[in-house]
Image (tube, rainbow, N blue to C red; front, side, top):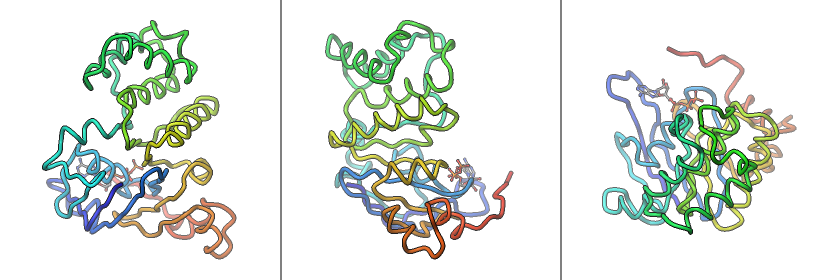
Length: 247
Ligand SMILES: Nc1ncnc2c1ncn2[C@@H]1O[C@H](COP(=O)(O)OP(=O)(O)OP(=O)(O)O)[C@@H](O)[C@H]1O
């Protein structure tokens, strides 16, 4: 479904590469977790795959297609949940979702029922006609998520979809993503919640200094890492305990 070959990225003016000669292959219907310390290159990689930024070198395909030749087709096949909210604060949840749906050519009763059903699944139907600027962080994350899946993408990219949300919101978001996946959506997500990734992902890749240092099924990675009881143990063994502050 996704094939990445030797992708590198050096931002303009930067003195180092954020992603270096990265190879990655993700199968259809996987839930792939991209894990790594702050500054490891997760957002950069996901932004490249969503065509939000261009790689400095290397190539990749999604569903066998490149953006160079198939930008509009790929736009319909992928969904993007960015780290920052992409919502209009002075519009209601419903108005926001109508707007995002219309960007994918959706309209009428089909769009309305999709919005209402999904708001309902995610516990937001009673707030459908309230303005986003009255919503909590967890509620905004859920609307942000709905905005990205109205067009039923085959592949969904999520950059830290559960950051800053309470346990209840997190559970419903993960439940919803599992449901999408069981209906055929391939999911690639980044997270700092290793426990969540351990339970949610079919495979994870740990990325550090722009390179994937290990990838595989969480259970296998834990079994193969001496002394590891969970994914966090594997992560710390491989990436160390030093802080990753940078400015
Ligand atoms: N627009 C930019 N210009 C220059 N350097 C950047 C830019 N965006 C990111 N970087 C650098 O690229 C590297 C990777 O950053 P990236 O945001 O991809 O990491 P990350 O793994 O997503 O981190 P976090 O977990 O903190 O979100 C870092 O060194 C960062 O400082």
